[in-house]
Image 1 (cartoon, rainbow, N blue to C red):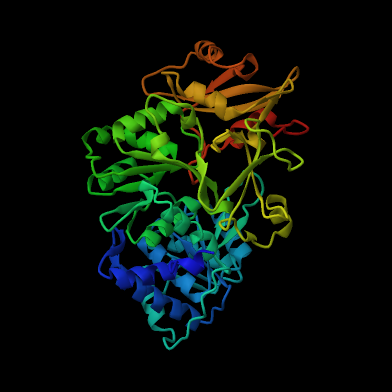
Image 2 (cartoon, one colour; image 1 turned 45 degrees about the horizontal axis):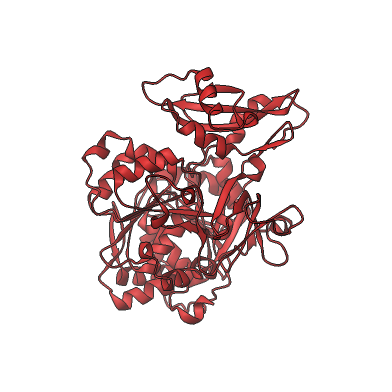
Length: 526
């Protein structure tokens, strides 16, 4: 167990470790200012005591409604100290969605920022358990700002003992059907793999006081909160970017950010922005990417523009983020087989490829990717049946992703099992078709879906966004795809749209693209 060998087994233990080692080093930074590690230790301790002093008890849920802010990280550390569970809420969500999460968690206390204060107070009216809403700064809608609220709470409070196994962070999955599920993570989940990875001495993970990591993916998702955990474990500066904007990200890199995690869509927007041509990328050491497939053509372009090391991460909320990664040395701009993979399992992680009977499939055969490690979630909050569907009795978490493993242990992802298209009895994985379409000079983005077909059951349809100043000739693109794909994989038709529908983490919502074609049908395949 990590806790036995690493004093940095929780958010607050990481902060206390670095507060002793280098107290003046900047831990958190955003447009509001900075916190040194010593200041972060002091502020988070005071906030933890105020939370307990207000009547909250171990295991109670608290919430954050806002963008990426340094104060969110202060709240994370405080929740860890106080034995509370923090549920960050995506700021792009509509009021009913916000209320669903608040009611599902039963959160009693929420911190927000001025831009969302009115929404927070509306939610308070509709969420019986939510007793207190506090604003990080003064604002008209919320009567209490954080500093005043803390000053009004008892300060002579004894904090509970640290329990690395209790829930600490609750992230809501962006499921495309039904209500989202709250994946509950503990400090063990968040930090158990960090020491093994550190001990493996991967050069992309060797960080020091000169490094600055940018937290730009939403903190309501594992990409944002997980990257925050990585920064604090490593004792570097976590620079919080409120939201993704290619200009401000490029400016931050120009000023000294050395590492960042972005989804491929964000990388594409960044490197194609005119400002990229005048940005100094010399201090950017590593670009971490994941959450959706990276087309080879885009990866090559990004490697050429950024000139840094690239690390691909494969994981999900339920695995507390990364469980396999493709190391920089496997990224060859000339292209190689391994660049199509999601890399190797991290130290401390087991990965298997199984069939529908949960039996291992032969090397190279496609099956479902399953994984087991200390990073696997505690479970879905208040949903034991859904938890049992995802994590089997032996602790193997079923990802829902179809893939295979080669003889060297590299994992290759075909697609989400649920997004697989069955056309005439043949399995078609959208990502494979999309990779081909992305290499067409007129195609900026592509999503492949299955639509009803009387003859084949489902037909392959591509939905594409053209590059600026390009037009899409559907027949020509189909002919282009036919050069690289088996006939049954080639799109039968192409729709051209101005932009893709996406969720808050940047993933394309294939369900929205499919919906018009399945309306009124007796059932919807996949």
